Length: 520
Image (cartoon, rainbow, N blue to C red; front, top):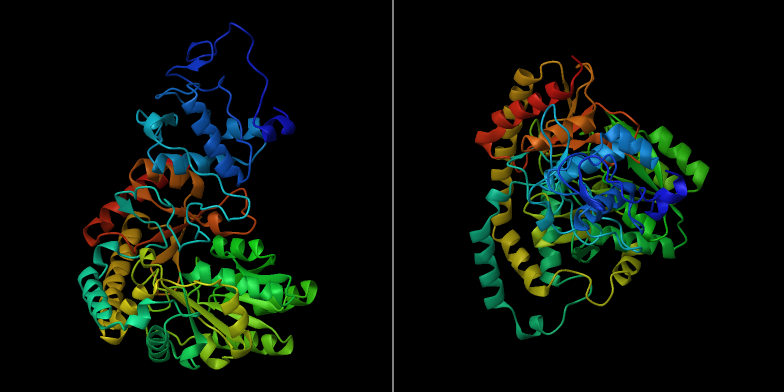
C-alpha cells in the first residue's frame, strides 16, 4: 500500500467475486483471518494510534471484520501501513483493554464477541489535544492507561489515586456546611481568580505543607492542572514566548496544551537527579526559550527528584535569562522515606509559578486545581481564563471548608500511610516474581519504573498487550517520550488504585505476561 493510500484511508479493492480467506462472502468478513480485509488509517486529525483505532472500528462497524476474526500480526500490519510496529501493538493493547479485541497467549489477536456493541473512539478535534491512554486531557486531569474505559481488575496503571478511599462523607459534610454558611452574594457571581475564602484556604495549606511563599491573592483557582497550564501557556505566548523547555519523558498532555497555545515544546533529558540543567541551559541558548515546565519534587515517570545543586542551578538560569519556571507539583504530597521536599516556588516566588490540583490526592472528578502565580504574571494568567475560569463557587467553598476543617490533612496522612504500605508490598512481589527486573524511582508517589532489560526478549509494548489479556493494566514508558524509540524494555507500574489484597496476584499476572513474550 502506498503512503498516499494509507493517509487517505483508502486502498485498492479486492478483485470482484473473490472473497479472501476467512470471509463469509463478498465484502463481509467472517470468523477467520483479516489478512485480506482492508485495514487503513482513518482520515482526519489525531495520532497514528488514534487513526488506526478508528480504522479498526470502521472495519468492524461496516461488517468487514466480524467478531472472532483474527487481526494481522502487528509486524505485518505495520509494514502494510508504513507505520512503526509500536503504533500497532499499542493500538491492539488499548483495544484489548477496552474489551473490543481479545488476546490469548499463543494465539492471534481477535475481534471480541461484544465488539459490535462498542462505540468508536472519539477523534481528536483540530484545536484540542487528543485524550490518549496514559495522557492528561487538556480539559481535565491525568488519566491512567485505560483512559475513560472501564479499568482492568488488576490496576497497575500509573496516574490514578485510590478511588476506593475518596473521602465522600467528609466532602459531603464540608459541602453542606459551606452551602449553609454561604452569603447570598456568594451565590450571585463567580469572582475572577476564585472565591477569596477558597484562595486563602489553599494558600494556607500550601504554606504549611509545601513551604510555598506569597499572599493569598497569588493563588488562582483552576479546574485542574491542565486548565491551569492552558492559561499559563496562553499568557506566555501573548508575552512573546515561543518555546517551552519540557522534561523528556513527561506527561504528554501538558506539552500538547503548550503547543496548542503556540509554544514549541523543547525536550530536555532527565536522569536520576532530575532534569539535566546543563542540557536545559544549552537548549535555552539554542532556541531562545525562557520558560521551563519541570516537576522538581517527583518527576513523572522516572521517579527522580531534582537535586539541591540542580535546584539552585535552575533558579540561576531563570534569573540569567529573565525567565520563569512552571513547577508541576505532581504527587508531591506523597514521600515515604522522609518528609516531602519543599516546593521550588518557595525559593524564588517571582521566578517560579507553582501548578497543582487534587487529581492525585482526591480524584480528577473533583475538578479543582490551583496556580500560585508571581505578581508580574498574575493579571495575564487570570485574564487568560475567561469570565468563569475556575470550578464552581460552591465547589470552591466546599473545598475551603474541607481544607480548613482538617479533613484534607487527615485524608493525606491516611493516603500516605496506605501508599507506603502498598509500595512495599509491590516491591516485594516484583522481587519475588521478576527477580531480574530493575525497579527504579525514589520512595514517593504512586508508581515505579520496572526495567526488563535483564530478561531476554520482551518489548514493553508486547508485555502491556499480553498483560491486558490477563486483566492487568500497565504502561509502556514510550507513552511519555517526545520521540519514542522502536524498542523499549521499561514499564511504568502504578499502585495507586490497586486494592492491597490484589498486589501479589497483579504482579504474578504481570510476570506471566513477561514470560509469555520473553525469548525462549
